[in-house]
Length: 167
Image 1: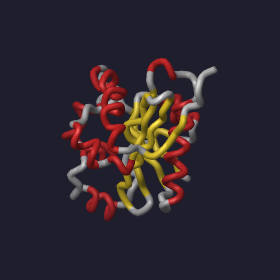
Image 2: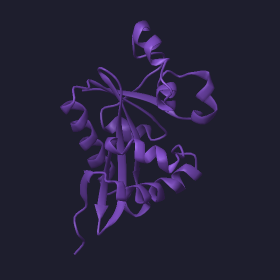
Image 3: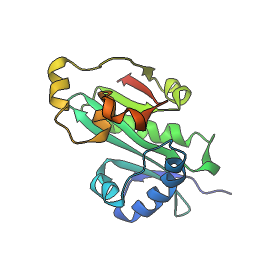
């Protein structure tokens, strides 16, 4: 009998497993490749799915503004696709967002069907006021630049869909 997959907060010892999970997806340009230091710096944002000591899924919740956060680096091991694990990870992140007062979730994805099934809708234009947009322009974070749909990130995000979910 197969052990149950446990979803939990990420630990520093999980970074290698997260990177190993993300690497093939980054090679296919489905996810953005990141340096190890970036994973350590954002570790508190991550949840991981562990099965028999192996990281088989991950996802992060990155707060962008008072009422807005991004779902990032949502990935599931190939042998776990179709098991519902991605949805479980996403809903854990949604619960985290609610717990800290976030009201809207953004994602940049090729997986439109998956996110649509989980309450996201595609957006065009800006989902924030002009005042908040001006504040977000000051961020050095590439994910924020993607959310703002800035021209400088377009070559890295071509084909991705900008989606939003209101909680």
